[in-house]
Image (cartoon, helix red, strand yellow):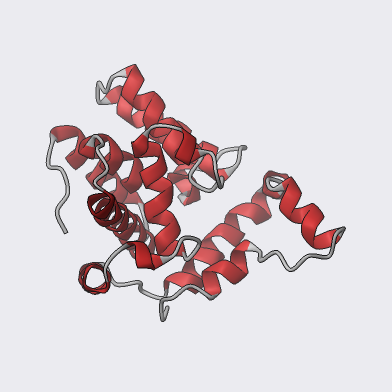
Length: 203
């Protein structure tokens, strides 16, 4: 699948290749591709390089080298910002990438911000199963999966996230209303694990 080949895009791609496990690298690449295809169908105007950088780096917080004391999204955003600063990326663009990564698992907020921020969540959400994959064509899904196989993604992703949350469990208290809905109002609100395992993908 096509992606920008600017120096900063290639540097971000290499960082992802060097540090993400194969299943996770394929996830970020599928995320970019799904978002790109959905944007094309919607006629969305956005900065392709900026979106690619945010998409390909959005899960750095699950990598041992970049794990800190904060939520994995913030650890990843900080790691990406530091890397991009060393590359000479502008502060304004770094701020967009930081928001895209920090907010990619927060429903509702990215859609109120720049399109690149919204697209990072959209693409990742399609691949996770939180956003309907009907936003892209079946032909696109087939091509994307052929180029970037899922490699047992559902279980591998949950295992990777579990390894991080075991180290800093308090960072998991992030969705207050969902927890209240499930535990106090007794509503059938699906948790993240159920969303991942029920995604419209075989693995």
